[in-house]
Length: 131
Image 1 (spheres, rainbow, N blue to C red):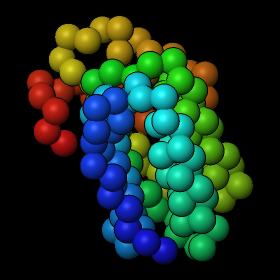
Image 2: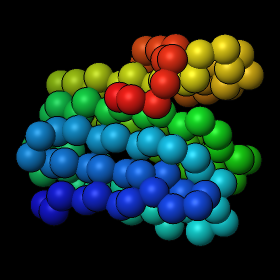
Image 3: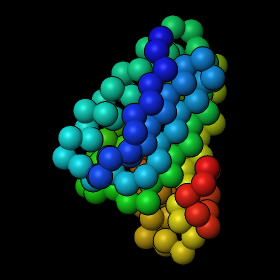
Image 4: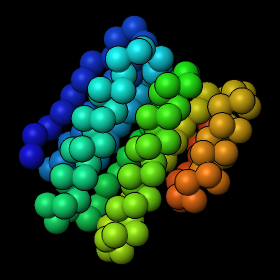
């Protein structure tokens, strides 16, 4: 399974998936019309990762902004992770979702997502975008 690193571009986030290290990072802004292709790639790689016997994933997400289309993609990604936890009870997901200090709207969106999917993750307020 290959290491994936996609540089951030205007409207699409930086993404790094390291199957050897068991980590996923999504960082930046997500509002480009074509971002669905990137999220689908990551969703497929995570499913492949777990189906190949890997049972630990540390994910760190820090999106300063995402639009409605990206919200749907993120909802689908979280749904996939929840499904993997159900199908593979030994799958350990350590998910931290960061937001900028004072961005109460983002915090509320994350809390709504967490409740809607019924998936456990930590919501962390950050002063800056260093993760």
